[in-house]
Amino acid sequence: MRGGFDAPGGIQYPLKEEALPMIGRLTGTLVEKASDCLILDVNGVGYEISVPASSLCQLPGLGQPLSLSIHTHVREDSIRLFGFSARADRSVFEMLLSVSSVGPKLAMALLGPFEGKELCRVILDENLAALTSVPGVGARTAERLVMELRTKAQKLLAQLDGNDAGKLTRGRGTTQSTLPTLVQEQWAQANVIDDLRSALQNLGYKDKQIADVVTPFQKRQSGGEELVLEVALKDALRQLSGHLLGR
Image 1 (cartoon, rainbow, N blue to C red):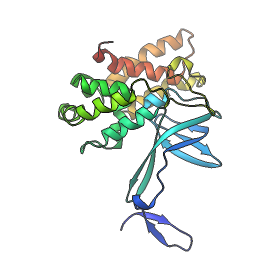
Image 2: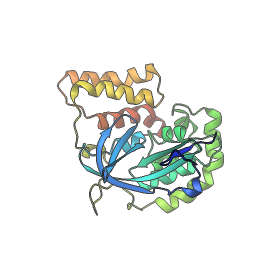
Image 3: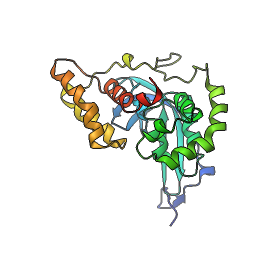
């Protein structure tokens, strides 16, 4: 049976993309967040939105206003919302979905350690090592990404370069820097390490990789340093993939 939604009276309507409104942006209040998703309250309606780690690292504190660029992903039996702090990241996400072997899960994984424009440059540089450092991306997939997206990435990057209009916004008419040092909320210290480990597991990293990057954070915390989950996650992702970009 085709999927759908139940209307009053028990009538089921199929989910047809052409008949559904596509959500392009949501602005509301951040009420919940986890390692790979959040709930945004928009006029009393809570939208569950999947977000990549690169956007998670830029979230404000709970109860704060937040605006996200949204990709509405429709299937016969489900509708999912994917949110991005920058319009550029959403554009790159949609570019990734144009590759037949890439679904939303893998596209989100690729945007974990890389921001949108950075990933375009990785593809243009044919940096297979950086691509295969992402869990779920093997050599063949990396080669296909480079082969199929080289031209698209070049055109998209040309459009995005120098355009800062799509940065994450808090409130109306203001922009928020993407630097993780501006993250305002400090998570309870007792849970930061566990949440960091859980986030990396959800992104598909192996236990050995996780242990290697989490241990230094545990030592820093034991030494009295207060950790912020979003900052720690961003640093961990840079350690897992940044060295492959020559940084």
